[in-house]
Picture (cartoon, helix red, strand yellow):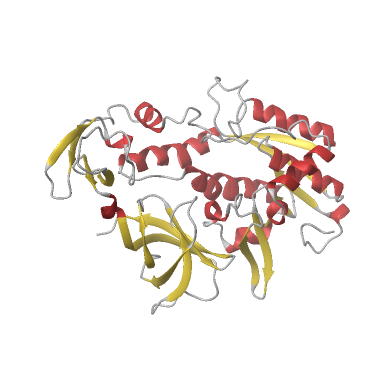
Length: 368
């Protein structure tokens, strides 16, 4: 079986496998070795302040780097560690902090794929004369009539197409995702078959540079003085409470408001310019029209100005909903949902689908 669909014999094909130290990327590397490819493993040191050397689940830091190195040694292929900490801080962590300060809810994993992994690492793989960059993402690369396409993974519970919406056509030509046709149980079964030391390793749950889940603490450390108190107001602008910093709130949040009210209150809007948190009933969270910018389009031709029927995900854990996509100028679009969705937050991604095929997406902007 040719996992990679490259028009060369495996023993004449050099590939770079991105290895985070987890079971997915380690199993990917083992499968490539088994298929007879010339494998070079690369692990990126993205974030490591010296506190995580013994901690697992950090992704690209500390003990996970050692796990990747150990797997490569066991399987007998070259392994390199590239220090991308400064690039990661600039492209991902700083942007994360600024996005929160702007009242948005950022997705650093998308930015990491978009910049560090599928730009910088992909460029490094080309410099190593590799024929492909192979990763352990759960997404399927399908050869279409006009070129490679991205499709949802076989395992819907593991599908990562949402986080890869910014992948360009040029990058997709060079990328391969062998695990997209498997579910997690199959991946672990392969890891056990290869006797990998990480076969039973739990999945990382946290953002790598926020190991304790305290986003606000990270932002406050990066932007001293960012936690300024302000007003919590209702939909009419009446002050109903106080908050200790807008970075502690995201659209759709219910906990932490500390306001007694006849009905539950949710964060409806975070206003960076006024420093206010707007709260209201759950009904106020419902949105039908979504403004999307910085569009990456992987569909055929251009987005029709008159609109096209698609399905979209407005959050990583959501189910695709039917919508009409209307193209605007300057890489922007409007998405009209056929059924209102609650808690759509600026800074998140709106990702487009045609059944299982991922057509691209863009960043959700605050509606005028």
